Length: 136
Image (tube, rainbow, N blue to C red; front, side, top):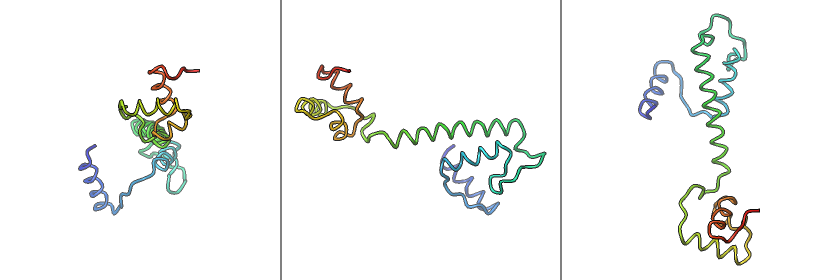
């Protein structure tokens, strides 16, 4: 959905229903989806009484898809937290030369990875590429 459309929906919700739309933590959104799938009102904790629209098969499928999407987002957010800053960035010839020199001078792969903000595995692969390091 485009940002403009999202903003229009937020404005419409605020104007028509008096709802203030704020951003929501991914974990909180997943929790609400789980409660809805379980037939519980996420705000009161009470069981919905039939017939509620959330029980319609299309609604249940949509909630399940939303939950799957939130699971992927949570995994992505966790990976982003642990990834070094230069993860995925292109290597330069100068950086290759620097890591080779540091490794040959006695620095550990962990130290080099920290200094270059790369993963240990990335440093191992680059050093191996130039015949400087052999995988154990």
